[in-house]
Image (tube, rainbow over all chains, first blue to last red; front, side, top):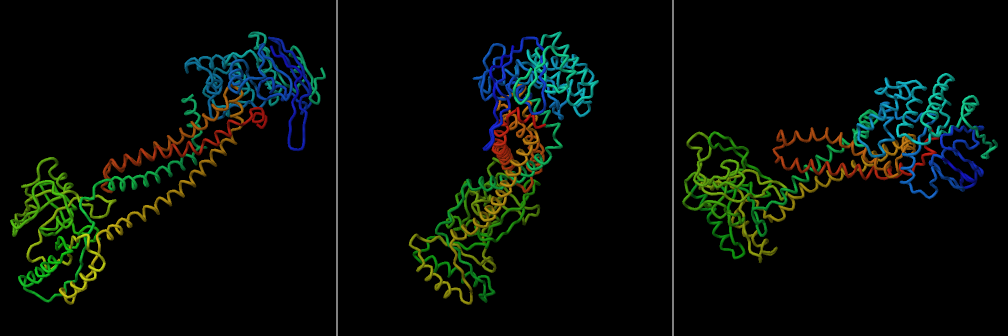
Length: 221
Length: 392
């Protein structure tokens, strides 16, 4: 599903070069639930951003769903992200000025479809994460766990093949974290969604199919 | 997408209050300036209605000690004959002091079929006044000797339209209810823009000077030949000094007074445009700053939109669209106030002036907002999602 070959990422300033990812090659199968662990600054999020086409590698190639996206234009990348990928972030990244339902509809605004269809899909996605009774709430009126569930609904509303989750339980207590993890496991099990999750939590990581450990930009496990 | 952006802008209306206020204030200022400019421009495009070239006015003080009307008339008729004999003088007319560009005004009111008209400019003139100024006759006739001791008036086109619409005016009786205040309209002339090129003629009528008028008349209008130069003006001055003894006389060229009168409009207009221009520059910088600030506050949102499928250009388009949507909210409020001007006939200005000014103001504000949001929008498009999402 995802094939990374010899990925390198170098951040350059006028005086300093920092090697964030050092020659990582990784194959992620369709329907796999993979977790990435490692100490802060080891390149986990950078690797996830590269997989999510939010950042370009300095070297190496990426194939997702058998498509080499290295030479994609901005427009092609945007379309690819919209249709194939779903993102979940540690800090949720919800728009506080929009109601829950409008937040979930966001990815659908960038594809064709009627407002009615968007509404139905968003309502369905919110039902999947158990938030059918919070459609008209604003994010600030929700708890952290509920916000993350909204973010998950937003990630799955477009029915993506891959979900990339960057420390989705990082801001939550263990009970809330487990709830979120259960939702992700169900998505993986029931819908066959490929999930790549960055986490600091060993317990959460051990619930996934495979664990990849990074250290100083290199894969150590 | 439009509904989504509207919802987002509406929900953020408190945060956008500064932006909305700035647009509203600048819209009202622009509307005022455009109303003024439209008013002046529309008047400027109208014909002047007379010829001011080679027209000189002579103002004299009435120091002559003659009490008898006939003797006084003879005295001034003598002056007329003498002046008419001068080859450089083509036409001549005594006039009330409110001739074009003179800064003197005389107004009154008329009634027709119970309908009151006021204010109406009241010009007291002689039979040759129209020849001196080249005023175009549109209907009926100008004054002649038949009008001696008759209560005849000539009205201008604006007054005719206001009183009689498309009906012929000649022969109609106007004035007040009393019999002695009734006047017969004998002709209609073209509108004369007496207050300068940028002001409308307004409603006007002309009355014939009677034999007793020399007691108060103090101005003579001359149409001079192209040969009339400074040397002639000097000779004329001396001639006048000899004829009108114990009097101060002043010769003025109507083209000079026209320029002076126009300057009275142009200079405040330039000052007004300059002040408005500075205000607009400040508003533009303010808008630019507010938009720039908003983009920096919304880096996370922009990053998210890029992550879920927005292209750089769609992010840029979204920000410009949001600005235009906010501008629309301010314009709606501003237009509500602006529309009161034509509805309430404020300053007695034609509704078309306000409507044109309103449309120009709307176009200007949209242009200003587009210009101010293009660069911040471009900057927003350049935000790298990975960095923006990591910052929050």
